[in-house]
Image 1 (spheres, rainbow, N blue to C red):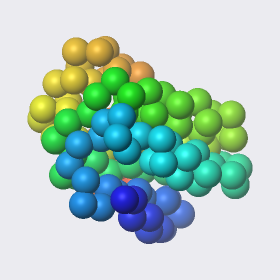
Image 2: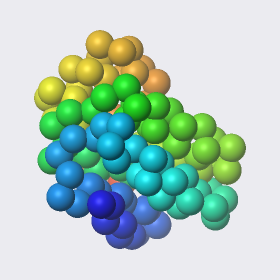
Image 3: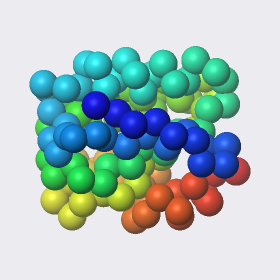
Image 4: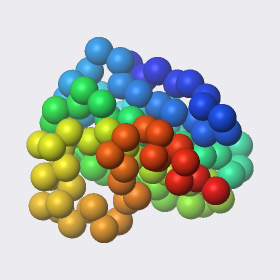
Length: 112
């Protein structure tokens, strides 16, 4: 469901064969993402390429992972957000909460 790779010192996570991030898949995704912060100061970029829809449970996962990152002195950023999903981020005022990037390269370069 998730593909994990390391680019420089950033862990990049992409969805594999999933185009909807909804209640059917959120629990295993949340556990896998949170487990990546078991090492302090982890830098994680979530690439949403191919995701066409996110429901409230999906946004809940994003918030939960952000909290886990902060508690472990890590960083969590999101990139490659489709226009429909970006509209949802804006509707929920979450574009002001998360660090969002148009593409993966810009996201990776933003980590310090």
